[in-house]
Image (cartoon, rainbow, N blue to C red; front, top):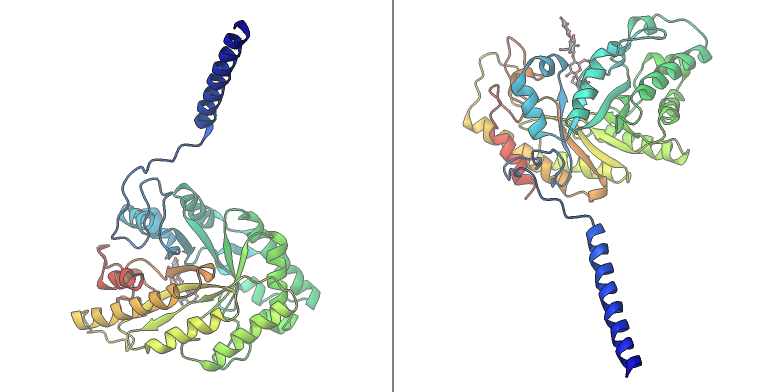
Length: 367
Ligand code: G3I
């Protein structure tokens, strides 16, 4: 009888301690975070006020103009609300950073990185080597092939090294191909030879083994020769284990660019298996450069269609290859295509930061 009573107690104690244990382990389960703020269904990048929740199928970004970033509150707030990736339009180009051998100007690039970090925005570096951004001290440099390799090495190590862990990807090489598919002439080609291309990627990888390395160019939507040359270049680099992760298709198009050519440019580049970045998207409305042209509903509709089909063609890629979609600017008058005498309207925001029809074309392309 006594033994029976004791075992009843024991069973009860055992049950109670198991219950206690279960409650304790439930306490240690990480609670599901409650969303803070609301997600705006009408924005291309859907993030809440913490900047953390992002349910876009891929990152959207913009080329950032440093002086406007420093001076305009509405520009800053638009960038924070609308984008989760940014590309420096100019401040990370060699001409802007490299003042002389071993002498660098970092202030603007540092400012941009700090802004991106504070707002949880990815940074795509642009660009390490571009024939069109070679400082005079390099153009005038004299030395042996090894001396030229040394200055290239020093520069890439300094820049990629400084932003290691802060920049997720780089346009290592920009526009190294001509439209006919041949290699473009530049000081690096002249003094190092075609091997300069391998070196750019190897040096960047040496400086930051985790950063993604891109080749960036324009015109594969209108030049078959360039499209083929680009895929051949990538295949060649890959066959020799030169580190390359992605292709940037600049995609500076105009309202009359046939849809099929945009789709072909994207699907052909994707055949390499690399990540694809629509890296400098804009749709030129006034490509005939008419000083008197005004923006009207017909032009806006044609532009919206190009925004929509390009977004859709990109969205159709396998998710693992969709690196991001970047506009080359934020609002129209700031675009490299707009001048004081010839207006243009290539971007998703007008000059008052209102969303244009083009913007809604992107949303439609994502459906
Ligand atoms: O900031 C100076 C200013 O101080 C000076 O008074 C003024 C006088 O011209 O120049 C200003 O710098 C200009 C800079 O844009 C900022 O507006 C440069 O001269 C001008 O050359 C520079 O143009 C940039 C161009 O690349 C050359 O670097 C454009 O903004 C930029 O949109 C354009 O971007 C390129 C991509 O990097 C590569 N793909 C093509 C794309 C369009 O050309």
